[in-house]
Image (cartoon, rainbow, N blue to C red):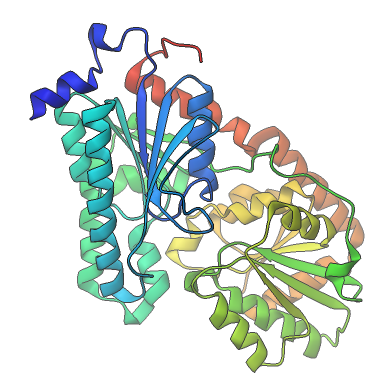
Length: 419
């Protein structure tokens, strides 16, 4: 069986001469092209001459089982359940592993695979890494998130110590199986080295960054302010660990403690916790100042971010949030929005002087930072310019392309075909 796969894959020697390297990207957390990081990676590789296939679940409006978009072949499979709780996640992991394995096997026997590119969470796909390596292909681990820390942030005291130990075990096995690791920031790179045992030279930082071709600044649309003077906004998935209820509480603080009736908040994003947060806003009487849009089109996203005065990242401090790069921060910066955030390590790395940080890590402190920005238009303008400059010169996706292609060059050498 393995010998047959070796012949099919043909990574080395004359078998690969004259054809582009074949890459299979496996992602479970979100479908493509909804997962912006994975989609930028896939389209960047396709544009650089690689033959790219993605395997992912359906969802988020992407339900076709197979399609080709921008030269990337996409195989999707349906999820049987919406995971909630430890048992639900175990069922989802097992199902996704089975479906991804079957689709990868067809690719290996049919077209061949030179690089298996696996994205976490979860870290359950290292056996597939063993399989492709046994046939002469290479295994790349795309380290998006800290799964043990995310589990703690989601479940806290409700979590199982056995589950956390299991996540640490899976993480170690995945790091050890990988020929090369790409990761999102220096905090994650340190985890790969210290907890995963990787050689520093085998961990390459490929930051997530906004695609400037997708985002377009437009004229402000007053509709989003709902007759109020100021507009603050949140953008992103609304999951339990994201702390969006902190922003709802901060808006109540701004209204009641600061005596402000001139501030409107628009919260853009869906996610499993969105209904609960919206119900919480209703419960505490914040309906009129907190408008939930659900998931929005790029057009609406650009309208709101072009109209807002302040972008808010309400993630409370946890070991997960402190070490994670939040895409919302960089999207705020692209639109020239100053940011109010809790004082988190990677938030400081991303935003720098474009953010005002709440050092006390309390809702009252976050509300104070929002009000400070709203009352200081000169600082808002200055910070907005700093953020936009950082995006254009350091943090947009185009600055992540060279390290991504460097990683692939190390795995498979130069691309023989210019497509």
